[in-house]
Image 1 (cartoon, rainbow, N blue to C red):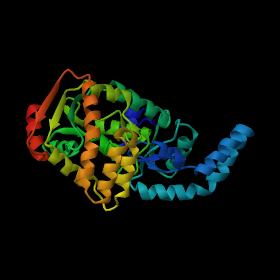
Image 2: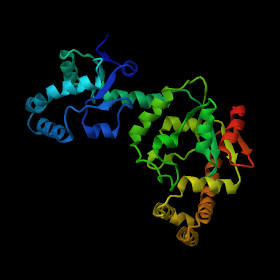
Image 3: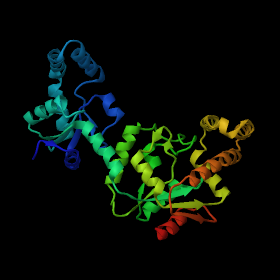
Image 4: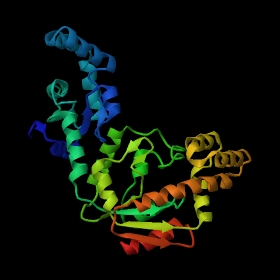
Length: 339
């Protein structure tokens, strides 16, 4: 097999190899191939020291420092790799596909491993991802509905019915509004979100329809990449409308936690848009434990925002679907018959 592989070949090989990202932890945390495990040649501090030596002293001295740092670790690296990959098959990469991955690949090969590396490194992979998000043809269907319509529940009910979905809010770890951080894990970086999104796309059958939830361009501090966003804006849009009572019930399920301070923080985020009196009403309702009343205040603001977004849609195919209930499973059954 060829030793240095293109991103496409490397990802294919990665399905039956243990993939090791030998960059430093901070590089890995900024963004990485979803299947890759961090296996750093240098710590962040060691990498900084080598880089400083390279800039201030010279390449040869930096390489010597790197060798002094890595030398004592080599036995540990091999033992750790044997535990991670008992079948001795590895896919290794660094930032540019240069010395770090080359050195580690050499070490592992000497220890009896079958190793491939990524030509151009993670940098080439990132170019591959961004180009893919821009150019990949997707048959998207956008599921719309005002705040509290249960769109995420409907989306997953569609999945249970055999439909293909991309859960953008799930990938972003955020529900998309000022309240969206509540009950969620910390958000990934924008870079990691793009990597995860593209991996999600590549697992799907691109000849079939793919359902996504209608979103703003930003989901918390995550931004949907240009290529994917432009496809969403022109895709068919099915706008679900359910009774306000059902919407408030959904919000109560999603956001009412034992600690109301998070809700108060979220209301403060939209204070200027709510207006002083509405904010006061919402905070007093929270103080009294009347979460339904507080939710009603939030809906007034979000309904206006959603309507504005709907009017700015570039889709030539918008369908309005009104239901007398908020049952996500039943709504999904109806939608699945339409597309």
